[in-house]
Length: 386
Image (cartoon, rainbow, N blue to C red; front, side, top):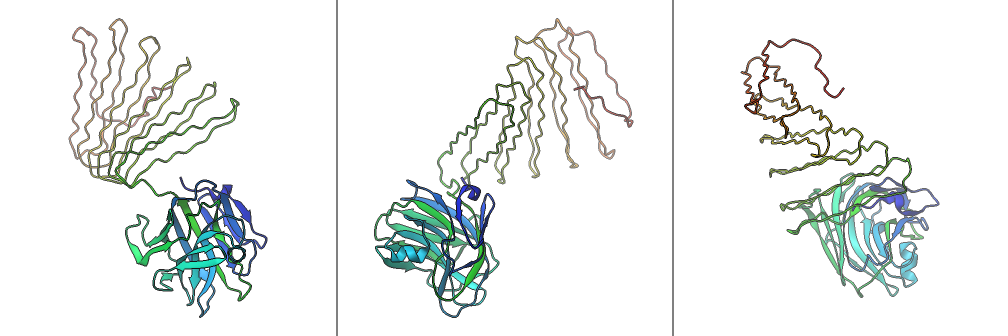
């Protein structure tokens, strides 16, 4: 789940930091700034972790000497700036931003432990460009700390030598995660501007099934409830998800579901809209795709067999292509003691192609049949739901 930076805690007297839900932005963050950081308490979650993050540096002060400007990410045991915590003997593991050339920078890994400092870099410096978006991973497993940088969101095109590893001096179990963290060097004034966004665990990339259950609840008052769920994976295995939206009140219940994929495999989705009340039930479904493959959809609208209320339905099947449009509608009832009324419209807006329609009326005992075939005229369609 992507981190919501609006729920993190900010320490920022000079006003360098700003946040949206997925993004933590730092503007002119200076290495002289004291106690400037955005953090969250992750106690019990940082002994082993696997984060992905997106980042971009938009500007960085020029210096011919290799100097650290800020930390994009830092897991640590005490809330402090990077250098004071190092000198005080605290523990922290960080992704650092460094530069020694105009409009260039690089990242490395750093560990502060027992008042000592340890780093591991990519083997080359100043190999990242200002104004370019990069995609990183930051992983700790036992005493192994790794960082990888990619040029694409799918994290398949690795940048340069950015498969960096650092062997830690202990299996640290840290408490806080910062994004970003000031370094607090009382030396040359050097600043950096950029952001980190979409920080969170990686998407499912194995062959395992992905199971998720979400529950949002509250007091039974008259307030509206808003929720958005996203379930996704990068794997080729099936992704199964079930969503249930319900209420026990008398107010209207509105829900919108979107099921989509970017692959070429079949996409299956099933929607069930139901209620146990005596009020009217309204539902609208739209099934569509933008690909070149066939689109199959089946709709079933029915009452419980104990309900003797009328059913009103309207179905519309259409596409904008010149291919044949095939659809089957079935209107049926379990008893023939009541009238069965159905109205069908079959039309097209392009007279260059034949319009083929076939109707069946059953059972055979039904003795009322009426067909009307006519030239299309522009008139307002009947609204069955009114």
